[in-house]
Structure formats: C-alpha cells, structure tokens
Length: 242
Ligand code: FPP
Picture 1 (tube, rainbow, N blue to C red):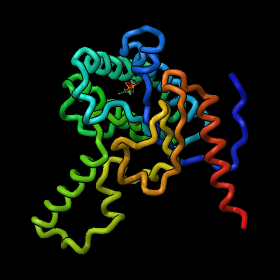
Picture 2: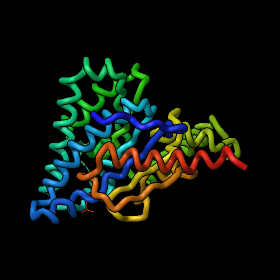
Picture 3: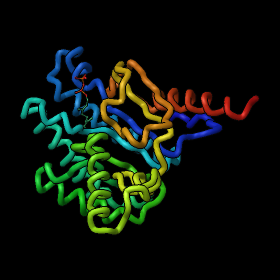
Picture 4: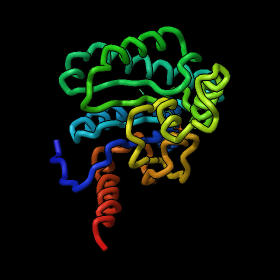
C-alpha cells in the first residue's frame, strides 16, 4: 500500500458525489450497470482509506430522489449493490468495529424495499457507538427535500405551541437535518466532469470547498483523493498567512 502523504490540514467531513459510472461503462462498451458495480468497489476502497486517514465523517451520494426515473433494471442493480454492501457490512462487523466505523443512511428510507430498510436500521443501531469514522450513505436523498422535512418539523412544533417562528435559528435547523450533530462538509468532491452539486447537502454545503475532477468515479483512486486533499490543504494553508 502506498504511503499516506503528509497533510497539514485535513477536512473533518468530506462529501463525495459518485458520478460518471455510466460514461465509464459506455467508454468500455459495457452496460451502464457495470459502471455502478465498479463504482461500488471504489466506494469501499475510498471508505477504508478515509478511515485510515482519520477522517471523521465521509458522506457518499449513492442515490438521489431523482434517480427513481432511471430504467427499472438500473434501479434494481443499484438496490442489489446496496444489499451486497449491507450484507458485507454485517459479515465484517468485528473488523469494522476494530476500525471504528459508524454507518448511517441519510435520505427518505421509506421508499426503499423493506429488507434494505430493516437491515440498514439494524446496522446503524449496532455501529452507533463507533466514533472514528462515520460513513453516511445518502440514499433516496435530496437536499431540498431534507430542508422541507426540517421546515415541516418546525411547523409541527409551532402548531403544538412548543416554539414561536422567531425562535427558529440556524443552529436549530442544523440539528433538524439528517447530518445533525456532525460537522458540515469542509470539502465536497465531484468526479465525472460536471460542475454542480445536484441537490447534494444543500444546507450543509454553504461554506464547503468544492473540488471537481474529470476522472470518472470508477477510476477514482486513493491517489485521486490525495490530490483533492492536497488542494484542500493548499487552500486552507493560505488562511495562515497575511
Ligand atoms: C452516478 O453516475 C451514480 C449513481 C447514480 C449511483 C452511485 C452508486 C454507486 C456507485 C453504487 C454503490 C453504492 C453503495 C453505497 C454500495 P451516473 O450513472 O449518473 O453516471 P453518468 O453521468 O456517467 O451516466
């Protein structure tokens, strides 16, 4: 394994938009779903590397609220990849415990098949005391949907007389969204050559450093993450000077 380079400043929380799977597959004359399969392997490796680096939180955009519009076969393959990941996480529980992995799912899990929902809930609960690295997997996630959900929760509290509208603060909002009590992402990485956030962590990304690369997600390696971290380090070290 290659040595970990020295970084002066590391992000506490990294967000990753796993994009470019379909194009990666097309370039090779493969079905799009092969790109997702390779993408799932890369997801595992980058997760492990983030843990080795001591990153506190890493959030992966795995399935957006818009992704239901894809052909049923592709949605089915993605669901099966989530199943495989859950089964593997369950199998490797002891190893994950040793590494200090906490797993969380963010998004509206209600629309997911029952077996995925229930195993996800079990694994979340069983890893909830781990503190080294939290892995948030965003599934059926949308940043605007997350904000609307929080607004509804406040509306209910106001209706119940527990809160007045002018008492609602940014801190209250941060505590009501899926990533409550986690630091906001210091850096968001988007491979795949597009320059937008596509409804990913809309509330949390207000001050995030953004890093875009043309590399497709299935080709994203530890070396690519090092490049992003070096850039993050460079941007942050500037704050120390005059
Ligand atoms: C976007 O690429 C990627 C997705 C919609 C799916 C990402 C999911 C995985 C990598 C599956 C593994 C995840 C876990 C948690 C096991 P795209 O298909 O939009 O690519 P394109 O823009 O090139 O078409």
